[in-house]
Length: 387
Image 1 (cartoon, rainbow, N blue to C red):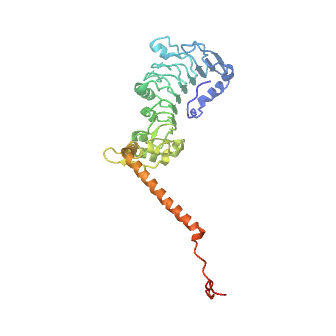
Image 2: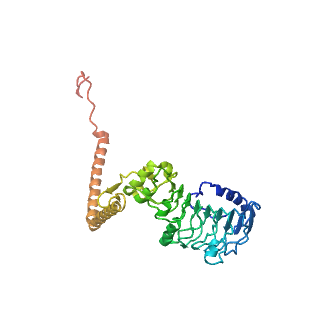
Image 3: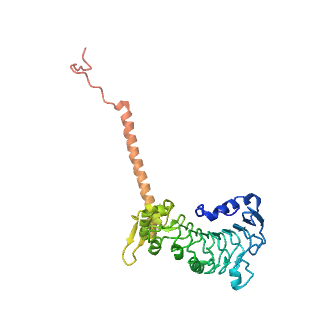
C-alpha cells in the first residue's frame, strides 16, 4: 500500500477527460498486481501488469496504442532525454521519435527518481496527466516538460522537499512551458513560497499547496492570483501550513474574506504564530494580544504574551524567592530570641489559665455562697425571741 500523507487527505485534481481511462485502469491492479509493477492499458488490452522491481528504465514492451502507463516501485533514478521514446538514441533522433503517440496519462510514483533531464518526456505528444509524486527529486531540468504541450495535470506531491532552492528555480523554468496546465499539485514539499511560474499559468484552475511551510502569501503572490480580462482565478488549497497571524497577515486575511470560494479550505486554516494566537482560526484571529508596528517595519507584530511577558514573570518569581530567602535567614538568626519569646508567651498563658482556674474553684465553694434574701413584707426575728 502506498504511504499516506500525514495530517490531510491529499486529493487529486478534478477528473479530466484524459484521466477517466486512468481511473478505470488503476482500479484493478490493487488485488492482482504487486506493489512493484508497471501497468498499461489500451483499447485492445484494457490492463496488463508486469513485475517492475528490477526496472531501471521505462519498459519497452508498452504497445503503441497504450492510453495510460503506471510504473510503481521501480528504481528509475534518472529519467534521461526521450526516456519514453527510445532514450538510447542521441540528439534530435531521440526527440523526434514517438513510440507512444496516444499515451494520455503517465504515473511514476515511488520510483526513487532523483534526476529528470531536459526533454525526459519528449515523444509523448498526447500526454495530459503526469504524476511524479513521492520521488526524492534533487535535480529537474528547465526543459524537462518541453514536449508536453497538451499537459493539463501535473502532480508533484512530496517530490521537491530534498532539492532545495536550486530545484525550485529550475521548476519555475520548467513550468513556463506548460500553458495548458489546469491542475498543479505541490503538497507536502516544505515550500516557503509559491513558484511564481505556477501562479502565472494562464489556464490554471487549481493549485494544491497543502502541508508546506508557508507562513503566508506576499502581496506579489496575492496580485498574481488575480486574473485580468475576465478569466477565472485559480482555486488555492492552503490547509496545514504554519501561517503567521497578526499584523503581517492583514493583506492575506482581507483577500481570503473577499475570495472564500477560491480557497475551499479557508475555514480550516489555523495560526501557528505568534504564541498569543496559536491554533486560533486564521480568519477570526484577533490582533488584540499584539502590538502592531506600522512604522518603517510595517506589518511587524510584537507578541505581548510572548518572550517579554515571560521574562517579566521570571523576574517576578526571582524577587519573591529572594524575599523568602531573606525571611528565612532572619528567622534563623533570631532563633534564640524567638524561642525565649515563645517560652515567655507560654508562661504568661499558663499564669492566666491558673488565675481563671482559681476563681472558678472559689465560685464553686457552697460555704462562700451568699445567704438568700428574706421575702418582702416579713419581719426579722431575733434568735432570742419567744416566737
